[in-house]
Length: 183
Image (cartoon, helix red, strand yellow):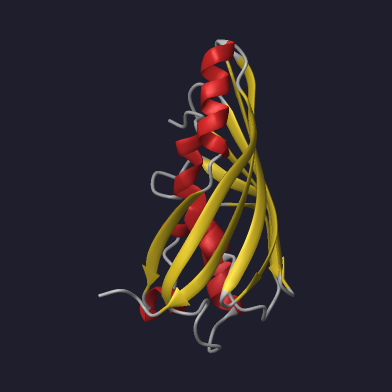
């Protein structure tokens, strides 16, 4: 079950981190599961080493727009004010994770209801449309960005349809490798 909330897209963050992989071979997929996309990326990188630079990464998210029909105006404004503040997260990418990412990196755990309409990655650019079916409705996430082995930037828009209408959110994220993993 997928419910729309600003926190609901945070499990998708590992896809954004994966976007930082080296700009080697081009990968494209249509109507593909997260596992299928992970497999295509792994195959494209066979024998080429790490997907991304291992080490400590800092990811920063900023939510630029948010609309939730049916929510009282005061509650919506409070959510917008809170969401507009940039939030950062640090994570350690080990050498093993850099070489072979877990398919759950792409949409988090419990992703059997999610599929990519399309996914393309190559020459330093990434674009994808991901759909997840669930209760109370469908979630669609559209992502576009640029990447390299030590940094990326991504814009994403999320639409969730449900009983109260279409809820939307737009966000920006960027990440950079900031050094070796912390002990």
